[in-house]
Length: 257
Image 1: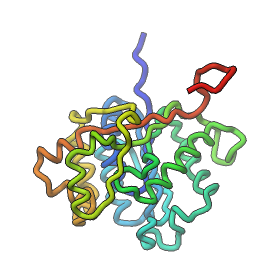
Image 2: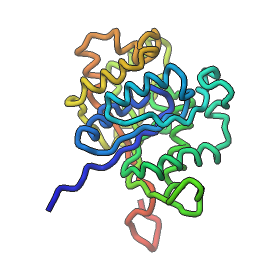
Image 3: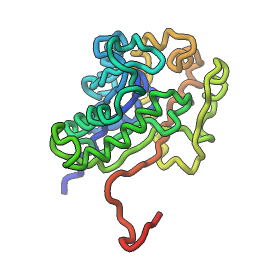
Image 4: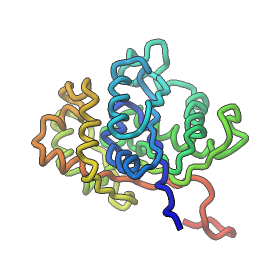
């Protein structure tokens, strides 16, 4: 009996560079195994310098061409001139825009930000989480957004996250430049992935975001100035919480955990 094909993977992230920082190892892992992989990015204009950097990063990770919704960054309106901030756009509109690529790509697994907005709580991270959760459910329902294609029910939705015990060297790195540090209880984490075999590819993808590497307070910039061993320690493990959509087995006569 031939082996099952590796599960296809779609990342849904707020900014160019979030995909490489949060799930670059897992994206590279799935691509190396022959899986279809792709990324949707909710902010920044498709013709911006950061979109060009995203193109390079996704090529390194094996995740195809960018899929960019093109809304403005909550903290940088000039990131998408003439477009509303992602956080301000009508919720129904942005859900429909994400349902489209979900139904087109038809992923087995979707990965997005956690509800905290990950370590720094960026409003775009939090809103991308909300929209992704709603869009994954909506994509499986034929009566919602029928103009975006045939329904598709993703098998698993994961939130990229950091447990309290896994923050490690990131804590002084971020708090040292005045950033917030948010993490989840360890028991919230359902998958801990050692991405050491794909570490070199993940780091090259992070470095492809040259504008962020050049900034003093951005995470790519902070990582680039660390000793290699400490940097490897920080980026060699990726943490996720499973948020499975759709019908799940259980007692049909009552609500069960």
